[in-house]
Length: 140
Length: 161
Image (cartoon, each protein chain N blue to C red):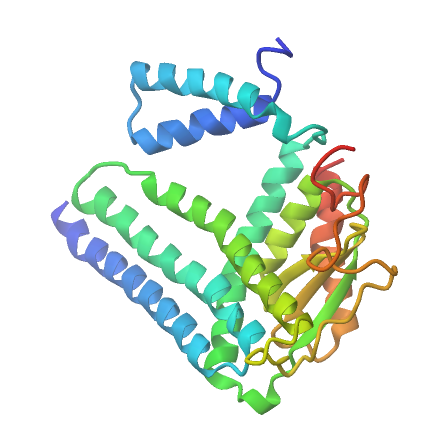
């Protein structure tokens, strides 16, 4: 373990710095991007690798320094992959709802207001999903 | 057998998740995990009335592709945040027509879009045929739509065959 020690520490430190760097860039994106929809891109992506790097660093630490296996980090990243898109989706849905309702502090970003779907139906935020389509949540 | 384990994939996933949470391989832990893996799918059955058949090999290949794309996406979005000025940014709404026709496939598709390069899925149309997606930097929205459809949707059609 002695000769591996310094290499292991370098690898762990590198993963921690990489992860921390990406988390920082994601947060900086929240500050400087022009409007809400653009700001959503920071936390859904840059932060995923930020946390991923820190978790890999944690796995390496337990493996190389303590000599034990740990898989909790894989679980954390799995739950993150499942929840991050849903959180972003809910924020985005509230945003287009507020745009439609003309809430005064809510203004469309540089991309403008979202276009309606070409099929004649509206988005599911504004109109109940049609029964019998995949957007519907019950089988009737 | 079909009635005892109505959803074998979910049962295996639950047992694997349980063992990972325990962080150790013991017989007692495995026993409790198997009980959970059998009971939970039975009790949650009303929530997934019509489930599609999943091609697990195509699913694993898709998962590897998405993980790779997430890593690439992180570098691309980080570069945009750090080096691109706001007035050079070309955010756009994309309306993606979908050929996927099960709620499960559409959910995975929307989640993939949210996790990969510069796109966040916002809403599905009430008829279930279109997906509203916001792109952070799309100079050519039509090319972006074609890329997403070719890269993810064609593969997902094979997973949820």
